[in-house]
Image 1 (spheres, rainbow, N blue to C red):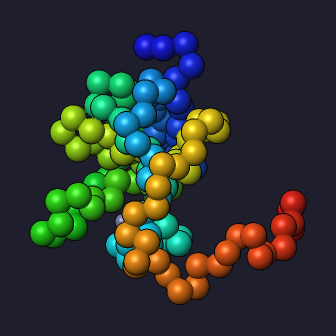
Image 2: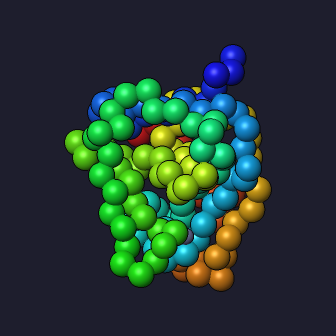
Length: 133
Ligand SMILES: [Zn+2]
Ligand SMILES: [Zn+2]
């Protein structure tokens, strides 16, 4: 337990977790499978050692979909609201950045599978910025 853990939760609030802010890496992945499971242009996942991660509540609400024949692409989500949730892979945990409750104050290390990025991925700099709609 550290003084300033990273905390996250799902949309309905039934699942919550925390982790020590000791990241191994933070990646955006632009592969087609991450587009499918994230429903967006890319996944954004923080990775850290298992020993730094703790479920606070709702671990029993997690549903895991294992993609046949692909070891590293399971999709873990809250079985009530469908929010993507952390995935434990032996000694490593991946945490979807969008599930965090506060800004973790870290920036991604790199974009992986960039060659597979969606053609419809816009340059954010070129889009108008609107506070709320
Ligand atoms: Zn939920
Ligand atoms: Zn991917």
